[in-house]
Image (cartoon, rainbow, N blue to C red; front, top):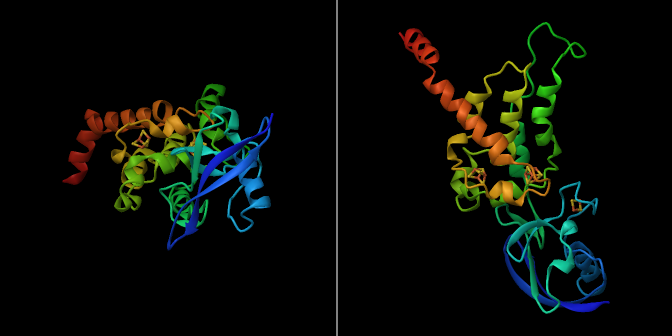
Length: 248
Ligand code: SF4
Ligand code: F3S
Ligand code: FES
């Protein structure tokens, strides 16, 4: 059975904006993205909304629905009461372009800062050999759809613009961790994660893990083990002795 839902949708651009009230028809089985499309088709033809797959796989339709970072295409209307007022706003950590569309370029810049996979010299593509257990260890991280909801929610950058320079955010710290677990990668990813990625800024609040639509255990399986490996290296007596000798 259809009904009319009360929506507050943020409208505006880089100069500023505000929530605008709408009443929109809802049909059974619909998701928030369907409602945004109906709004465009019937009342707000110029409203900007980014989407692509409508299947939770392209990572384009990230927004804050009732203040919670979510994929609009995976947020069922049935999770809200019919009388509930539902707010839809652009993700907050990145600059607004227009309405629900933000400029997520920060994330692509951070992606470029992660040095590519570095195999040992003399081993050509096609000659790489890994055991299944090593393949499986990082498989989880490869489910990432780059929706950047984790990047948006992490308080290190959400509330501190000044941290955007030194901190890569959970999605790219996870990439450092993935490469560190790769048995053929020869770069010192622990040092990269600390010095390039700002791993020390993460204080394990786990908000990133809570919002990940792919249910990747970013904190428990990538960030905490990476922090442990960094600490092990720092306090490893052999590493310490080596540093002392070579600093002389
Ligand atoms: Fe999105 Fe999860 Fe990937 Fe972060 S780790 S970008 S929340 S899919
Ligand atoms: Fe941020 Fe996730 Fe760490 S939310 S503080 S990167 S555990
Ligand atoms: Fe692709 Fe929502 S439209 S994830």
